[in-house]
Amino acid sequence: MEISHIEHIGIAVADLEKAIEFYENVLGLKCYRIEEVEDQKVKTAFFQVGQTKIELLESTAPDGPIAKYIEKKGEGMHHLAFSVRNIEKQLEEVSSKGVQLIDSKPRKGAEGLDIAFLHPKSTKGVLVEFCEKR
Ligand code: ZN
Image 1 (cartoon, rainbow, N blue to C red):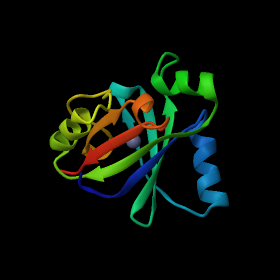
Image 2 (cartoon, rainbow, N blue to C red):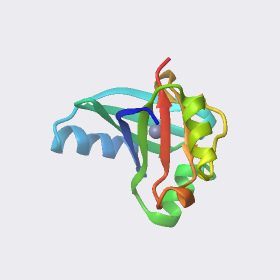
Image 3 (tube, helix red, strand yellow):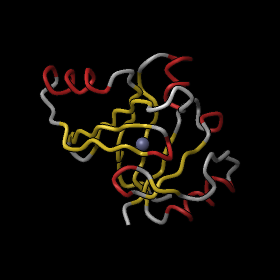
């Protein structure tokens, strides 16, 4: 396994504008990018904190994964993303160790990263994302 650092922490929010206000006005961070990822039915806002980013996620559709998550669990931490090298190889490796994958092959995420999710049933309840910058 070749994990270099925590790339970002994904946080599900009901209202992106209000969440950005909190991160900017209370925590003093600066939103440097807002991006919609149609594929995942989300609008994202990014903040850089050292080597790691905070990724706020607001659903763009009532049936989107983030809308469903908030319905079930409320707003809060949604996933943990590790920066890896050779994402296909890492997916094969964890799969060979019995981890259930949500994405058996990487797909395009925000910021042009290749991303893939591991199933939280296999990862002690945390939705884990691998991402690789190409
Ligand atoms: Zn993410």
